[in-house]
Image 1 (tube, rainbow, N blue to C red):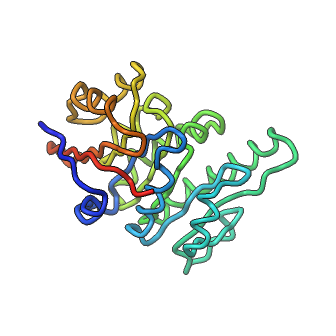
Image 2 (cartoon, rainbow, N blue to C red):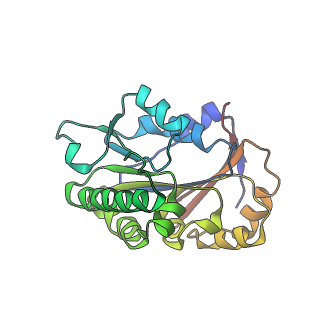
Length: 228
């Protein structure tokens, strides 16, 4: 097994991302995850992006791309196809946790019943741990594939992702890491030579990534670099 190096433009042309296939994007701040997310958005027709932060350049950018901001599932209309589900921050952190947990739990339930949505969970660790929605996230990862539901899960480190994310993702984007625990977690990617990917991941430049595609028993790996 080898890792092919190709330019970003060629990578985008080669990417084949089917509805129902989950994605994991793992990168430290400033490495290029935001750029990747924006590049992937056009690949999916029906998308709901979950906004958890008080503000973020990515949220503003996707609004310019046609995503309509709503604060609850009740505001989503039958004709909507690009939604930024972004509840306003409350006066206290505790109140913010409460409203976010309720709103995001509702949207997990909605995508299970309506099918074919792509759910963008940029802050996967926060969603699972701080909001306590790990069971809902895991359910979607394990059950949505059969009804063409898709999740895109982001985190700053592999070890911060629930194991179910890597185990159920067909497409994994990994930026540089040298942490031993992070490298061990890569073994949760099905069919992967974790030692090979770990060795390669340690040599990546700041904006370079390794892309791992698993479909059945086939595993394909590419090394590329997002355009800045």
